[in-house]
Image 1 (cartoon, rainbow, N blue to C red):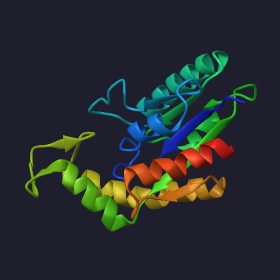
Image 2 (image 1 turned 90 degrees about the vertical axis):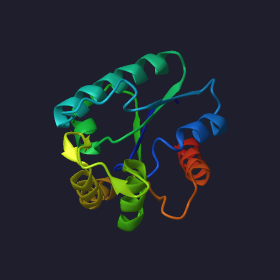
Image 3 (image 1 turned 30 degrees about the vertical axis):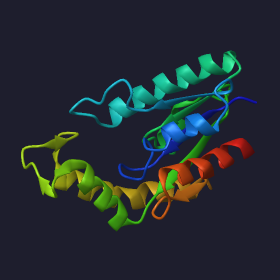
Image 4 (image 1 turned 180 degrees about the vertical axis):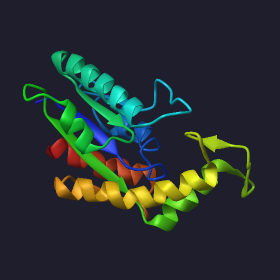
Length: 177
């Protein structure tokens, strides 16, 4: 049975990094993989934007399921929000949460947003200074992880795994669901 898979987590846990590996691990005639942010992220991205994008990906998933494919969407999604959007007649939605230790998330984001270890103080991410964005991502990781635990969704700790290894774990979970 074809499904809609959301691979979620805060920035820095490896969602985007696993996409090429998932593409090589999953049969392309059965799975279509997307980055949640593929259509662009506005400077003022907020919950309203995220819900709008979630609706878009759910609709894309329904179209693909009609073509006998599953959709995989890698990017931040909140199960509470998605569950409030989907209807009873919707296809099955499966969530997998990517997590990492706070210091790992912080280091990965620092590497992403610095040049030679130095922040551009004028740079903003989702309308926040980089340091504030990193701090909020690290703090929010705990909260969103608790939402995934509440639903008993799979959680993959990416702290000590390469993107290729994470993709293998995720693909195994997907193929068992």
